[in-house]
Image 1 (cartoon, rainbow, N blue to C red):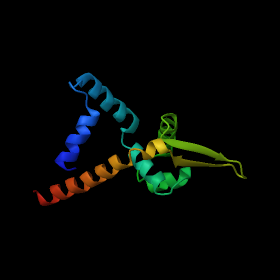
Image 2 (tube, rainbow, N blue to C red):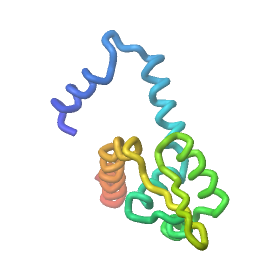
Image 3 (cartoon, one colour):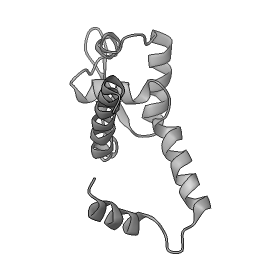
Image 4 (tube, helix red, strand yellow):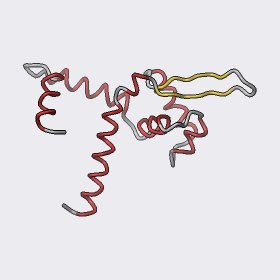
Length: 126
């Protein structure tokens, strides 16, 4: 992010004078909702078109059925994803991202960008 844009964002987000307690609470809230090993990969999978439990599970190497189930419940409770029961034979369940979840899409893109740059930095040693 360019310095000018970063300064503008900081002025919009951070209080003046700075309130460290409020900033830490906001960071903790964000990490509580998005933190952990699996939440971002699950969001990425769903946003890439995987809607069914097994499709999401197959798209994320190393995740267990139990962990995926637990994370999907938490993410539904935090309104990041929507669980829809499709009354068919057999009954099907689909997961989709909510508008609320998509509201931090730019953050995820920046994280992917940073992760790629970091991996390259470690490879080249620069």
